[in-house]
Length: 218
Image (cartoon, rainbow, N blue to C red; front, top):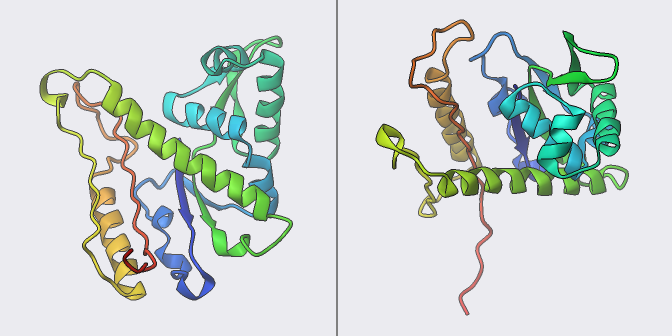
């Protein structure tokens, strides 16, 4: 499973690289991958990003299985899987599958992307736009799925969706806030070899914090 982090900021507002949320050490088995221009162009496609999301969230799958879930042609899905593999985002599951049907899994890594490296480059601006659009759509869809699902017992009403707009911070203060929030998440992230509770389920934590330009009243 991979953790995704993007920092859409103006160059003068960019946080130090060491402050990137995905560089926390909560899972020592995960390497940190900084997405470069070639990788960005290889990933920035709506179907590829959706396929990678499913492999991240639900584990290994075949092209046939993914095609059924996504309502796509198996040949199309197979081609995009090969593109993801070529760019190192997924890998074949060793010892599983046949020559006719291969199983794929997401590479275990933390991915970070600093948008300031690409937003002013005409060769990568389009890919960046697609990537960010799909990333935001994925975060929205995950919340929508949670709200639409039926939950029973102790899981009922335990999730939270918070929107705060009453903060007024400097760039340095916002950077500190992000680091503190990520440290809290890291403290609650179990070690890879930790025993899972019988009633434990996967939990998604989405962190969005960003400045808003002031606009005059009507």
